[in-house]
Length: 338
Ligand code: ADP
Ligand code: MG
Image (cartoon, rainbow, N blue to C red; front, top):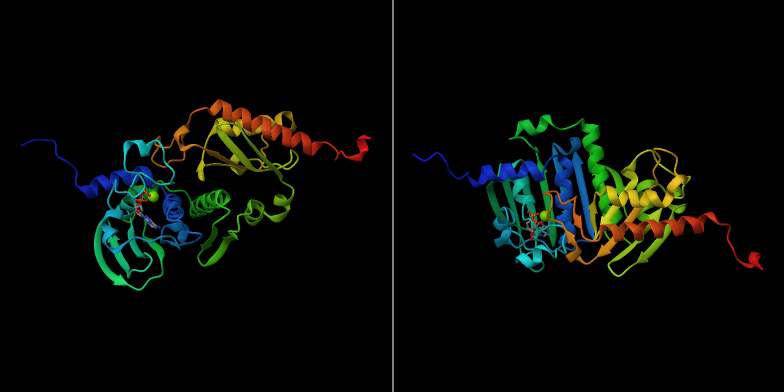
């Protein structure tokens, strides 16, 4: 008898889920990114008990056709890329085709979805197995309900932090995604209490006001610049308005929230000695570039990306923010110069 055998699809999905779905906030991130990729301009997220009892994400995007439900929940099945070439030119937030299969492997999932002009569908999955699928009345868009996350992988539960911390991670990820998409209206509610409601009118300052407060938003400086490869824009605080954590710096690359220490440092370099030790600005930095310059396929969660020309981008950031801070520190010059 041979000792080596292939794992069942279900088991390999559970293994993959270990990388993609680490905690409730990962479910929220994946479902919201799917909603954005589906073209939604209204997205609502509800959760209870730090996301462990239930997470519901509703969107008004394109929906999934009845006969594609099974594929949507199959690992490595995606509508977003097709060829090897596409992999190096990813224009969507998703492309790995892993999220729904992974979530369904470690939770109970109900999906209610409809595409324009077609009858909708409702389906249930539990531990990776489809339990039911029926036609259903539904508006164009998708509602996914994830219940009892990690009910069948108890070891995972042990790695989670306190409910308060897990809740904060959900809030943090939605805040950052909302900052990257001022054109989308987001609602986030915990146990029915609305924590965030952004207008979705495209105005970044208003979104920032919703998240960090009106006073902070109003005092922020606007910047924008470009070089042949990158266009950057955003808002940043004056040197005297700081926070004691880097978490208030949000980097959004082609609409994707990313982490990148070198780019954080480029922002800090613009402030130089004006920042007290262990103090950080609040910055929203949006970067637009040709997807060909970005390799998103570095890590399953896609929060770390590899950027060609990172040095050039860092220089652009430091010089743009530097000029912006300098201008703000000078008394308004006008007729006074005469
Ligand atoms: P990926 O996003 O990498 O393609 P997912 O497992 O997250 O993989 O989703 C699989 C497929 O299901 C997507 O490619 C998309 O076609 C479809 N899908 C998932 N969520 C939504 C949604 N909210 N609206 C419309 N289609 C969706
Ligand atoms: Mg996805």
